[in-house]
Image (cartoon, rainbow, N blue to C red; front, side, top):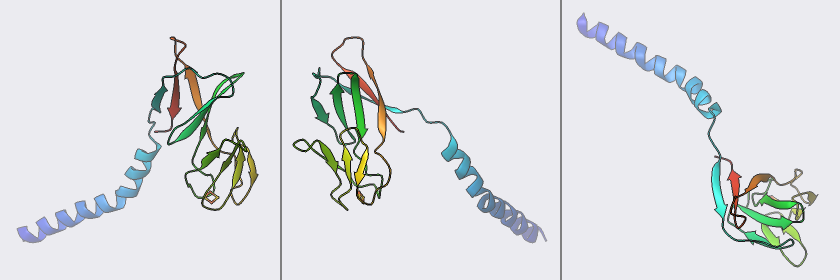
Length: 131
Ligand code: FES
């Protein structure tokens, strides 16, 4: 009899854990995660840019702009073509302006831009990337 109760109890807790797993994983995903910070330590003049693995940082007359290199179609890593001043996705040839605006191709959305803040030293900026 004790063994039967033990098995029932174990089965009860096991079923509870299995059934509540989707709920807890959903709550965990919705939890706030602070953005990652990437510091670029170089002074750029307007018109210059830096290519990083996750974004391209442009220095404009209005300040620095960081444009994501992740394609909004299926997530390929996009290349920036300096001569044409466009982003070109190597996977399905979606094209975007240097500001990340959609031009052509299967991707229908603009590229994501990241928040950039200049540091107090005036020589570097911090780019805030999603967690
Ligand atoms: S992944 Fe970039 S166009 Fe398809």
